[in-house]
Amino acid sequence: MSHEKKLGSHDQLVRRLEYETVDGQPAFAPTVISINRPHQEVHEGNTFQASTYTGTVANNDFVYFALSTTGTANGTHLSWEITAGGDAVVSLYEGFTGTLTNELSVFNLNRLSPNLSPNSAFEYPVISAYGTLLHTQLLSGGANNQFGGGIARRDTEWILAYGKVYLLATQNIAGTAQPISIVGQWYQL
Image (cartoon, rainbow, N blue to C red; front, side, top):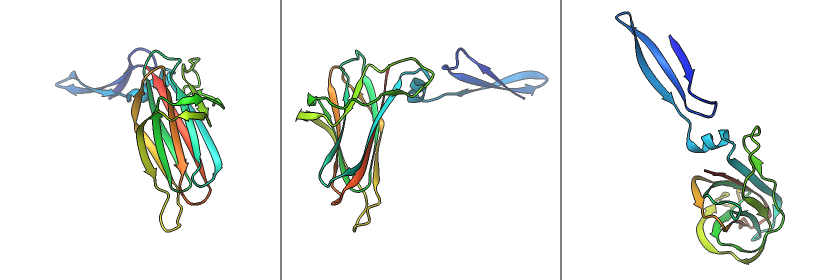
């Protein structure tokens, strides 16, 4: 026989107790069901997302996604997903300087939560200086003119310093115009 008992609110840990009988007496075999921290932050209404898509990016041109952490006093936990129609190079910079233009809509992943992100996201900034290069990788789209596209997914979070602007720069190097999309997802503790 199996019973579930919820401990606390919807956003807290759920514990399932499996009841068995040993010599006529109940024996408890507790099992803990847990969710990972980013999933928990979605439930608590602290996870946010912004995205940009450009359908035609000329060869050697860039698509930019900037995230400003100037509105928060806590570290921002950032992950991203970048998709391109062909070969591309993805770079993450810290300490970008320039003009932030084209502010993106930022959405709370918990659509029932009233929480707003203290961070702002932008596309197509005017760049004075990129800042410090933290990460770069090839986004492979195929070989021998077989452009199949590629995806760069950064599952390991970067914990960003507050009071800075971070820039994800994706350069199309496929040899022809290609689409590129960037999705940034973050949470605050």
